[in-house]
Amino acid sequence: MLAERVARLNAEYARAIDDDRLERWPEFFTDPCLYKITSADNYRRGLEGGLVYADSRGMLADRVAALREANIYERQAYRHLVGLPAIQSGANGAVHAETPFLVVRVMRDGSMDLFATGRYVDVMVEEGGDLRFRERLVVCDSSRVDTLLAIPL
Amino acid sequence: MLAERVARLNAEYARAIDDDRLERWPEFFTDPCLYKITSADNYRRGLEGGLVYADSRGMLADRVAALREANIYERQAYRHLVGLPAIQSGANGAVHAETPFLVVRVMRDGSMDLFATGRYVDVMVEEGGDLRFRERLVVCDSSRVDTLLAIPL
Amino acid sequence: MLAERVARLNAEYARAIDDDRLERWPEFFTDPCLYKITSADNYRRGLEGGLVYADSRGMLADRVAALREANIYERQAYRHLVGLPAIQSGANGAVHAETPFLVVRVMRDGSMDLFATGRYVDVMVEEGGDLRFRERLVVCDSSRVDTLLAIPL
Image (tube, rainbow over all chains, first blue to last red):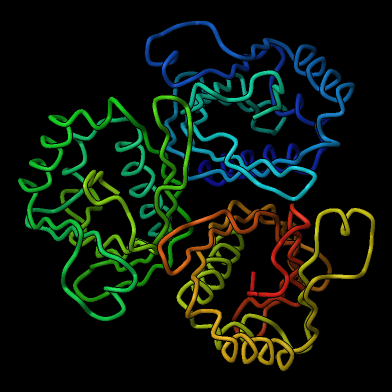
């Protein structure tokens, strides 16, 4: 069932990030792909610029390598809560969905804060039996997300 | 499947509010209906008084008009995360459900806070092929929800 | 359907706690069982020690009795938001799942804070027509969860 498959993809995506298995992250995308983090303001105004941009698995992998080098994950952890998706089937078997999310950041000293909220605007396709993201636009509600960190959202 | 339809209704309801398509909000209800925001304390004690009360689509539309006039949505945005519903089928095809929720408020300067948590206590009926709320009681955990704003929850 | 049954169990579990029907809490477990609250750090390092440990319904009931005596629930309430589960079927009909969660604490004065985030690492079995937890490991992201309270998570 489609709704269940979309839910499972979202659950596995979030788990890979939260369990610090970042090297698995590019595999959730087709190659080429489109991954972009932007703000609701920019998205509404149709502005192309995003905080983060990648259009291939290679670029996603580069980002993971940069995060590893900066030891970001030694210092903090994340917890994604992913909400109910609104799903639409599109042309050529592509699946369009919008899904709200909330991310909490947990610092090494144990303190927690609301890191980001927003919605995923996705285009998914089937590839080799798996559902993958051809496009994942991460539209953050706040325009003040900590962009230097550039953690996968 | 019932669980899926309830999930979809909840997802669309939250999306309409979070995407600032408030004019669509009354359509999720039957006419007449019952929409009430109350606190867990009041709900437990069986008190009728609520922070917000509407018993028709017209009253819901009036509320939206008031929010538009006050430009509330120029100054802040909301993000609903809706949890897993506990569903019971009732008499005459009515569906009863309780569903937890959490709402984050995002201010124009980018700061975020936990705005409200609680549960929806719902009675839904089918109408013209759609599931709609005949009753939606929004039972907030905290009694300190900012009532002046009276944002749809 | 398995995914739906797991979701329902999680929804009812969270509801029993959040509605302050704690006496119902042990019934979600088999007897004997394993219930443990631990931190992601300890879990990753394979350390056995947990903040809370119970291996029978009796021990779970004792914990509830202690909470009642301390009147914890007079002073605060909780709201669980439970995310999408990643489910695997195991040997002998046991169901393994990992499910993210977020818990908000609501104080009597109405203030709210993020109390805990993490994931449930569960083993479930069918017993008398119901799905029950044979094991529920509550792996908190932060190691600074308020352990004195020892609220069911």
